[in-house]
Image (cartoon, rainbow, N blue to C red; front, side, top):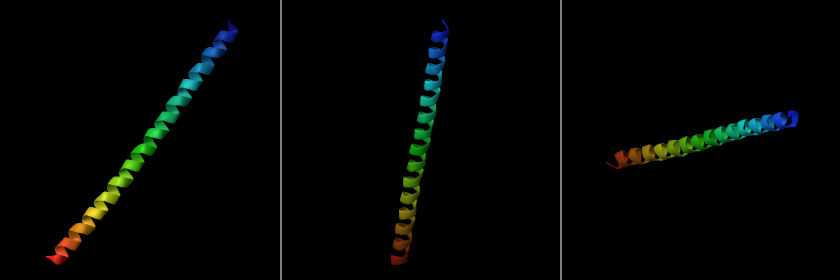
Length: 55
C-alpha cells in the first residue's frame, strides 16, 4: 500500500510538472505573437508615414 501511495504522489507531481511546462510554453507563444504583432504595427506605421510624405 505504501508503495502505491508513493506512485500516486509521483504521478501527481509529474502532472503538475507537465501543467507548468504547458503554461510556460503558452506564455512563450503569446509573447512571440505579441512581438510579431508589434513589428507588423511598426512596419504599417512606417509605410503610412512614407505614404503621407509622398502625398
